[in-house]
Image (cartoon, rainbow, N blue to C red; front, side, top):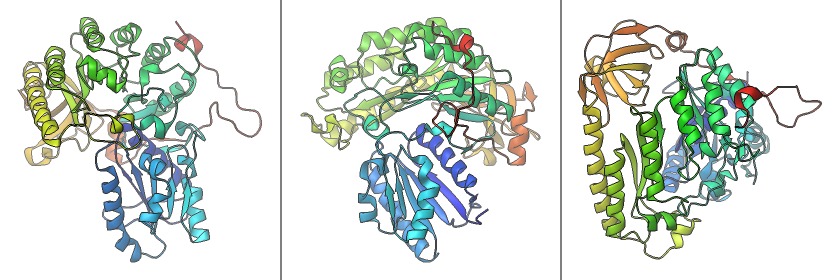
Amino acid sequence: MNGKTYLVRTYGCQMNVHDSERLSGLLESAGYTAAPDGTDADVVVLNTCAVRENADNRLYGNLGHLRPVKDARPGMQIAVGGCLAQKDRGEIVKRAPWVDVVFGTHNVGSLPVLLERARHNAEAQVEIVESLEVFPSTLPAKRDSAYSGWVSISVGCNNTCTFCIVPALRGKEKDRRPGEILAEVQALVDQGVLEVTLLGQNVNAYGVEFRERGAFADLLRATGRIEGLERVRFTSPHPREFTDDVIAAMAETPVVCHQLHMPLQSGSDDVLRRMRRGYRQDRYLGIIDRVRAAMPDAAITTDIIVGFPGETEADFQQTLDVVRQARFSSAFTFQYSKRPGTPAAEMDGQLPKEVVQERYLRLTALQEEISWAENRALVGRPVELLVAAGEGSKDAARGRLSGRARDGRLVHFTALDGVRAGDVVETVVTAAKPHFLVADGELVSHRRTRAGDASEAGTRPTTPGVLLGMPQIGLPPVVPDPAPACAPA
């Protein structure tokens, strides 16, 4: 043990959240310990996002707040990683010379070495590599949750959406072999985890690197056969590659949740073409119809961008029409803003802020109305919940706990002694709001779980980061792929 403490702050998407679990695992393997709540850490790592609006301002604002803390703590180190680090590189230490380490999305595993080098050399270390050094899931991880875990199946993206900078920062798609993925899921389940989310920039393109059609549907079915695993989710698919075999795998594999996040981005064919999304309105709505035919109880969520360059009022009306037809349970809605380095930033037809804002308000009002109506239809129905930690900010004041239903909806329910995060309860929905459900009656059942035991004890799963399928010294161990489970169709 080196006696030093660390803190990782995460900004952005699920990929960044999962990368931060890897950073925590790496630091603990190097002898660091997590800083207790409310204390200053010896090492602060900012895992950044370059996609969200004002990402730059947020980073440099946080770095500004950290400067006096560092000045008062000789030996403290600050590291910046993630997508914004990959984009801005050495510019970060020029603007904030008190930063000690800058590392990119492709060399997460270098962090402990870079920290030590910065200490030894007494100067900032900036290391950005252009391609993936090792697959992130080969690195050790300290998981945030005792009951639910991220499992990355691919990194990078082969799409060329004109509004998105992710492919430039995360690189081309790299797929893990199914045996490696299933081994990681098994390791989590062995430690009590009940739910996993298969994670990728474009999960349903999985298998493209090793040219196995149907690989993602096969992976869903194989994951569903792991004993002790109760829920499987995945995010995010792309409508262009979404196929009927995935719908069948979702419908036919009991542990795969009937929840689908299917980004729309726009309902206008003209806008979709300029976005270079590779599908049109009819194809998108056809997918929604087939999902609902196979799984009438499916909760479908989406992403929508308002005010893309050249979007007319008629284009926007088509987006509203699709929202009315699709009846999403919820939607992540965004006002378009320029991202330097993307083709859309240079397009003609950039819209005034006030036009984008007005359309955004109309869209969110419509979606809130639909979400509320969809939730009201669930009042009186039984619901199984995986009890969550920290999901309800007002739970303590109202005598409630929170949990996630199998379809992903958040439910606040009456707290009872002995119910822990990670336990499974069944209750009945008594009220609905646009963004959550309420169940204020008696519990129908309560099942204590190993995940609940771990939550109560304050322990979290760890995965050691075995180097399955990666180059290493000497002959690699033979780790057979479960070919019958994930064989191509």
